Length: 105
Image 1 (cartoon, rainbow, N blue to C red):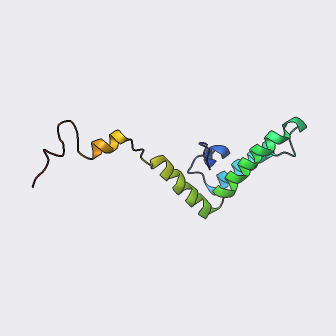
Image 2 (cartoon, helix red, strand yellow):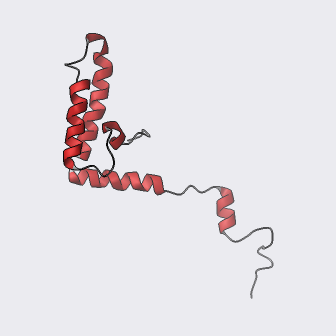
């Protein structure tokens, strides 16, 4: 999912939600966003919103899909971002040290 909104946020639940909470959130949102229950001028917007809600429910209600999604979500938030300055500083070469003065042989 390329969006910054998590599937948990789509359903309005926490990441620790139980299966019952996921189903209850889905049903609550489906009753209000389903294209068959909204007015004609909101059908297209409602259909797109309902597809997002259904995709979130489809993933989070399946234990295997949810575990994979959680793993991906966790790794996206934990992935460090390296800049050239970070790599340079991590290499040990700073203003007080350089390659020539650190030679031990």
